[in-house]
Length: 144
Image 1: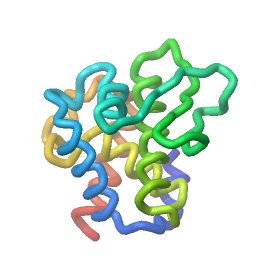
Image 2 (image 1 turned 30 degrees about the horizontal axis):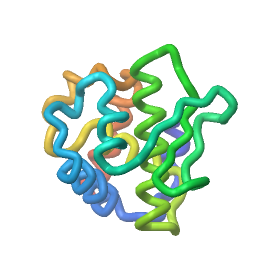
Image 3 (image 1 turned 135 degrees about the vertical axis):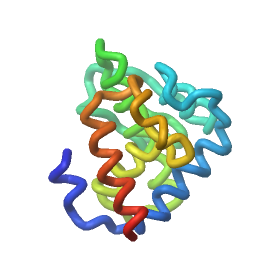
């Protein structure tokens, strides 16, 4: 994952943060770090999430507002997969010229929104490696 994020981003880091911020503002989640927050965020943004074992990691864009996400017995991994497919959907809709590094940067910003970044140590709703990578991507915004 670190290698993907190390590739050049096609979108500005601040723009990606803005997309995540706008999504969280629209969804108005009480706690973005709650278990299942990815499903709730997607639902509040009008997306339907369907768990499927027959997709790679997931698929977005086949049908508007529908995300097919590979099932997982691990709740934090499932939540991150949902957020990742949501990131694909949000970027496909608003910024079609983007790369996979942009999608992952947005995934991490959706998982740990900038307004709650001080609480990143509370993040148990996604794998710990995602929290560590979010720290790195947040530096891209502050140094951008």
